[in-house]
Length: 150
Figure 1 (tube, rainbow, N blue to C red):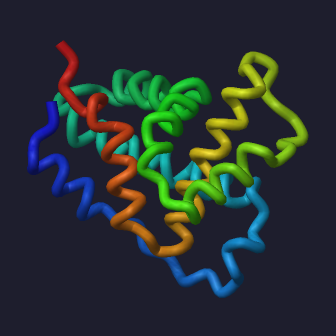
Figure 2 (cartoon, rainbow, N blue to C red):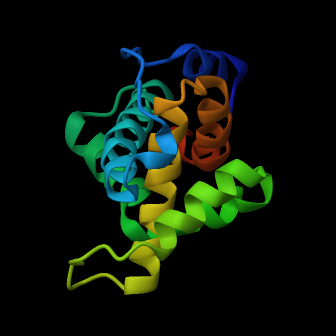
């Protein structure tokens, strides 16, 4: 169950970085996904720390893994796909169709590509300084994971 304080705190959480001077469309999908992986992981960790008060780091780690795994990220992409504008869809499509080179053996290749698309979208929005939009989409993804466990 979401509460307004948790939502406001996530909305106020914006990582700062120096501006990227390159055209973001020229940055390889794998690089966008690499940045997005870290940004997404940190947003998830911040939301879990806020939403699961009293949990120890081991419990938080297990909860984070369940949200940042490739299958969970593929589901997350499906969840937000209808909310994406043309530019965001273009980034996600480009990353999903990009040949990753190597893949983990224990993950379905289609799921892995969808997870990569989500990570690239997060990386793109972060590097483009579209923090409010990034927060809005991540809030949609993690809203149901922020409740305190029984």
